[in-house]
Image (cartoon, rainbow, N blue to C red; front, top):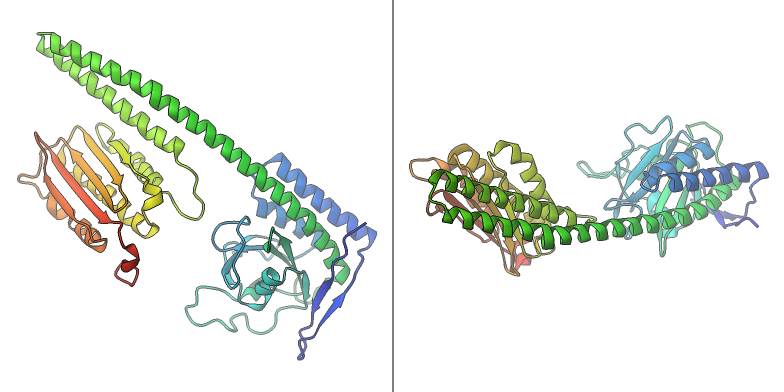
Length: 421
């Protein structure tokens, strides 16, 4: 037996009246929307990693014969997150002849349309756009009035989550087109009920796939660290021991060079291990991943790739507001080495404790004497002061230079009054 929800039709008259109606879709209408639901399930099964919002919007656009169909989701994250009351939302996907430039638009759920969809959780009809599209928006406001997704007769159908709707779909026909009927809204609501279940199942499958991939990555990372790196380390010690036994200076230097090459290989493997075991984070970027990407970008410019070491729970303890400064320090420090050091080896270390973040960049180049390296890192001192830290650039023994940049992680709440930009 088909599900017959109580459906609401919005009246745009002066009294703002709403009427509650029961509707039973026709057989042809039920078949059309059932075919759309079947297509959605088939698409999700055929390609688990597909754009779920895009597939959903495609199905509703075809079944409703709408000129503009939009899937509205929370601004941060995706359809798995439930928007809080009054939180900003966005157009996650848009389809139809009028869909150009709609995807990504930021709306405000405090407006009548989307707020009612997410807070009320019930489908409803709209006769069409009412008034100026800019009505109620202050100059410079970073959101657009949510009736931007309404170009004519429209139905709004929320997809239920565990507690509140996680997606609200709007299907809008052109101005002057045949309005949606309550029966069409009933059919679309039944589709939404089935689609909500399909998306939740697909989300669970995707999560299980991600966990399985992460487990495999963790295992590979452990094997590389516990077996491969240790064997290379032992081989390097053996090469160094042989080098110390020979009297042939040329052979000794060659063996020492090979030992250093093995050190570089170990550093590269450690970097790969960090990339394999870095957990996926939703809602914020990984500081550690940003550093890895940065070193990969600059790697071709160095005679030997910089050796990288991490220590501590960097992604857990470093706040989002500090991440850009950390990446800027690593980039500027490495660029400074490239410009001035004439170094053969470069080392990057990023460590964190409960109270302090420390970035250290060292090289075996010409050092600071007679160079202009200090002027090149003046901006990093300002970034350190911003976080109650310090910057030092000194000569390194027996040769080269060492840059140390620190930031305080203690009492960050005291810095949120505007002193941190």
